[in-house]
Length: 135
Image 1: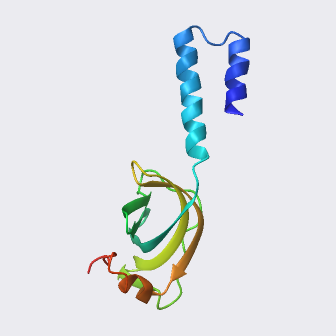
Image 2: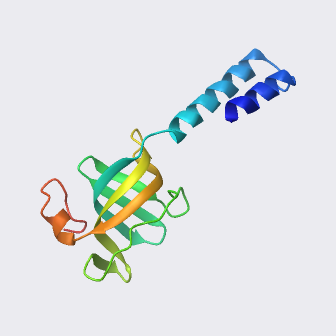
Image 3: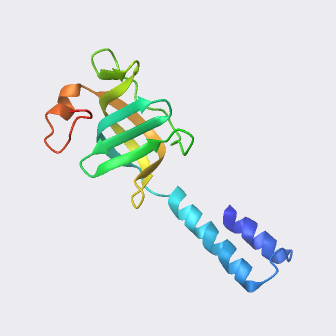
């Protein structure tokens, strides 16, 4: 769709120079490539220490889901039942979860959560590749 917008702009003379056209087409291509990135299943510690801040720490490192006043991934966070959540700051804290996400591997920023499922705390605690937050 974005490519057709660029083609329409070209046909109507909206681009004033070849350089502007090249930059516009490169931007469209880069945006489309990120939008088509495959979703990856990541399991680890989901942490929500304060309002608007959330991360997932898995075997590959820490992935930013949301930053207060900054970017927030699209999609729903996992829902934790009693016994699946460790409260560390009133209702804020951490739990074990698997999230299917679309993320930027270079920045480790989650763009979209496709699905999210809470897991028993034991699953993350027994995984030697994971370190429990605050532990």
